[in-house]
Length: 316
Image 1: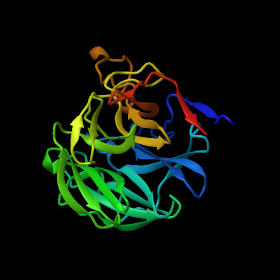
Image 2: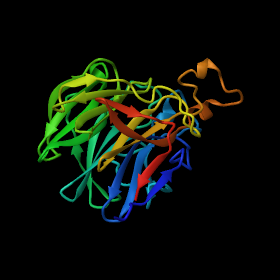
Image 3: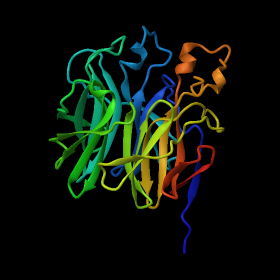
Image 4: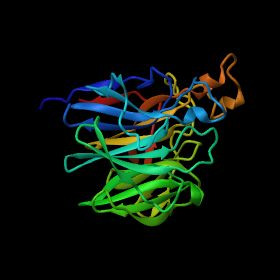
């Protein structure tokens, strides 16, 4: 039997060559080009900033790879604007269904300098991951919703999880049969404030991970609705190059019986306290920088496990 080829993934996996701050990654296979695509929020670390303006005015960055190991920055998505001016796009979520790519992205008008502005969820469709058509706003009954995760929980049965900041930043859910029309079910994960939920299946179990700003919270479910908290992952710094601080807002790609976690971290921010020691000579822009890392997930005794220090082999 021919053995499948594997490659070692580098650490970090990807750095944005413009602002050096890729966040909220999502990875998907482009069926038309036979390449891996990485989409992310292109935060503007190092740009002139007033308070939190550097995390606004962001575009959706794009990088591509033939083998999953070497990534090429290709720019940002164009044609997403729904109104005039320089606006904000965050946290793309992309799913392919019946030959069409669907993207759900968080949207804020303009470039705010504080957090107190409405946030919407926008829906786009594409045939090729480059040319996107605006399909409409997703009405989720709140003016402060971000960070979509969409998963097919049954044949033509889709579920959307998201952060509702008007409801204590709890993870809330909606359902749809066509990816265009959504009915809100209500909150599903309420044990702590969090963002960036991601749902997947591995080891015969249903899992959700979310970013609660001290690592990734992990939940297990039998029905995609009732979630049990498990042990956290990525709540301590790693030892690989630029893999310091907590793991943030992650995506999971399941390939057969294996699952791969794509997350971002701030390697110079001393988030997990690197025991409160400050790195001398670093500017605020340096501390804001981020990288995308990859790690493998496994299931052990009913718990999700991630060794962020291990080398990651990626099947070809």
